[in-house]
Image 1 (tube, rainbow, N blue to C red):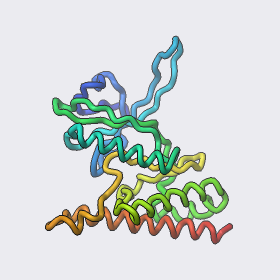
Image 2: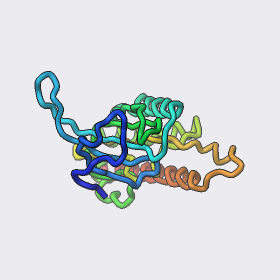
Image 3: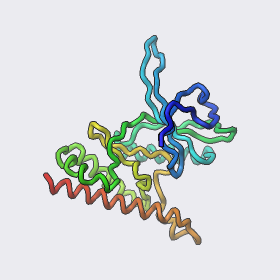
Image 4: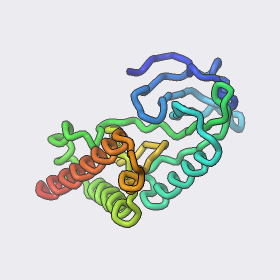
Amino acid sequence: MAREDDRIDNRIACLRTDRLPATLVSDAGYHCEVWRSSGSVRRAGERQPVDRIIKIPRTATPAREVAVLNRDHQRLRAALGDIVPPTVFVRTHIDGEASVIAMAPNIRRWFDVANPGNEAELAPMIARDPRLRDALAHFIGSAERWYREDDRVLDLYGIDNLVLDRNHHLHYIDSFGVFFHADLLEILPDPDPGLATRIRTSRLRLEYLNHLLERAHDKI
């Protein structure tokens, strides 16, 4: 649940968190807390609005893992384009430990697309909007290709990772650990049961998205 007019709890070397108004958007994520900071900055003598998301990982993130985060984000952006908001990963110190924060534009979410509870409202909406149908089909096709070719499972475990805004634009807004590696379930002698659950849930939600798209086509 969001906490209004709050401050980020952590000490972050690259941010004056003691002076930065912020709202806790979510602390339920597996990898990170999500904060929203909005206001204005002065640029070229003019006040310009700023509305951004700041993601703070739950554990320290060494430099080599930051490189992986950047690489995976670039992979997403290359395949999905504007479906993935541009995200900056900033190496910094959090509470004295080397880590990273992720900053991205705030997406004003309207519907969680991977939530089956929204199917009755989303299916006719997708049916009426060919641009949205194409975007969803492209997203599904890319996720299936990553799984088929690389054993990479796109993270849909977080049910609000794939969202729709009020302009009917599709957004994939996850930043940390966006891929699960399915082959680890066979390689590791004692794989994490939680990983198996996250992979299974992500695959089931991708199947649901296929179903949602098919239902939308039936309504055309």
